[in-house]
Amino acid sequence: MLGLLLLGVAGVTYFGARPSQPVEIDGTESSYVEVTQSGAYDRNELQLQGDSATYTLDKTKFHPTMPDQVYKQGKIQIWVDQGSTTIIAITLYDQNDENPTKYTTDHYDNPASQLADTQASAFPLGILGLGLIGIFVVWFAVARRRTTPVRTTEPASALPINVGETTTGLSPDGKWFWDGLQWRNVSADGRNRWDGAQWRQLETTSLAEGAPPPPQRS
Image (cartoon, rainbow, N blue to C red; front, side, top):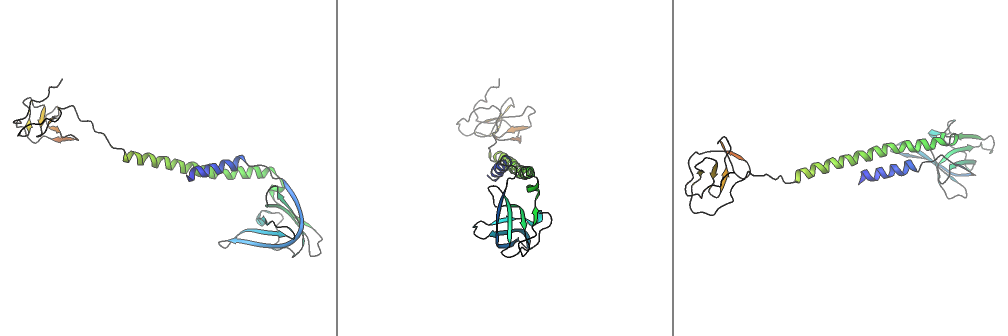
């Protein structure tokens, strides 16, 4: 169920959140490309010579503002969050591998901010998961109510009696109606008769002929 899955992801995200732990990696640029999705900027991917990992960064989160390109085969220092390939700080050099400029993110400057941001990102997932679970519960309750047969309790009357030819009509006391197969209740005001499923208007005031004696009401 999607709701439970989202709630589980939210729980893992929230309780697994931690402050960032910067790890420094020094190297030389091998590849630096910009990745877009649906025509919009998504991330940059960086590869270093002699390193098989692909490191990613969101240049919009760095200060000061990062340049769009880096020098080919230029000297680079990066800091990634421990256990990941996400760059949270980077130092770039000029074409002579001199004059370094360091670009940082909030998660590098203030490691505790990563804990708060990660936990905050879990709340929308949790709310969405709870919402989907609530919708499912309501849907299930409505569907079950629609498919549950309604049991109608008929007022007490005599069981069917096998008899010969009879005519429909009232009992002598007017409290019962013979429908040709069995006696049915007549309402207290004498206007309606019970047909086994619902009350119907009494069409006749004539007495039943050939019917067995009606049951006795207590």
